[in-house]
Every structure is written in structure tokens, then in C-alpha cells.
Image (cartoon, rainbow, N blue to C red; front, side):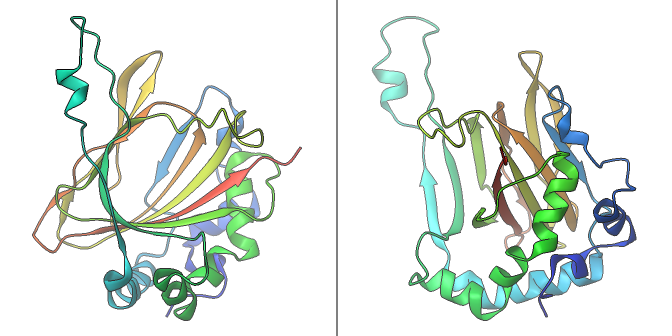
Length: 237
């Protein structure tokens, strides 16, 4: 049910990205553009089948990801308007740090890892980035339920010499019918002034990181969910 090649999950418009004929090709090569979202690049029927496989095979092996607001961020303040907020979030996830992890094993068994490691997945990211990307990219799976979110953060990694000058994240966002809304809010010209929906049934988002952004709490029915299949790509020198 999960294609071996990412290309087989694409719509006609998505295949135009791979072919280099879509208007979004090279969009993130512009240093002023940090984010893009499109809900017509994945075949919705195929994406829905993939989502159902994820729900059946991975829901029980997801790890909780909970980083609440630290109480000391208020009560240890010593100056008015001196707030400092670390990244906060709530979701469930699979980290691909070890193949021994139950979530990683389950993702391999249903073919998800194979699809996300396929050549066309990287080629698609390269088409949007407008430049060559390294092999050996990072993977993560996230599942947002009602009320789950990611607080303001910038995804800058100054301690990592390979990532500190920037990199590309490619997200495949697969929502159940019960999702009412969830938004990605991001900064432009120093203000959180930009907003994009990530609540469509099958959305592709791509980020040229780092930049400030956050994901609002998911709103929907009690069983609503948004799956995010995430690839992190370093630039090739």
C-alpha cells in the first residue's frame, strides 16, 4: 500500500516538479523565500491509502513528544518583558536514530522507510531547493492529534558545522477527514505575519531553514490526526 518510490505517490502536478517544469521548481533557491506549501502535488487517493497504513501499523509504536512551558519561564523572571521561551511542543513521533526501535522496525516493515529513502524523494527535494542535496538524509515521523502543536522555534543548529549554514526540510502532511484546521505561522521581516494551512488531506511543505515559525494546535474531532513524514536534507558543497 506504500509505494516503493516516492514518485508513485505524486499527482500530475507533483510529477511536473520532478520533471523540472512546475513553477515551484527552484523556489527555495531564493534566499528571501523560506517556506512553501502546496496541496495538489500528491495524489489524494494514494495519500489516503498511505495514511490508513500509518494509522494501522504505527499508531501503537509512536513515542510521546511533550515539551511543556517551563514554570520558571514566568516565576524566575527578574525584569518586566524579559520573557525567554524555549521550544515547546506536544505530539507523538518516531525518531530514526536506531533500527532497533519498535517504531523504526514497524516503519520498515510497511515500506515507509523504503519510500522515504527512495531516489525520487531526494530528487523532489532537490527540485524545490534548486540545488544539489546530500545523500544520507534524516527522517522523522510525527502524528499530531487534537491540541498538539509546536511552539515558536527557528531550527538553527549552530553547533553542527554541516547544518549551521542552513538546510532543507521536506514534509508530507496527511490529514484524516476529522481535522478542522492547523496552521503554520512563520516570520517575515521580523514579524510572525505569514500563515499557511497544513490541514488539507495531502499537503507538501518545504522549508529553507533556519527561520522562526510555529504550528498551531490541531483542531478537529477526538480521533482527528495529521501525520507528517519529514526528511531533512543538507546542502551538497
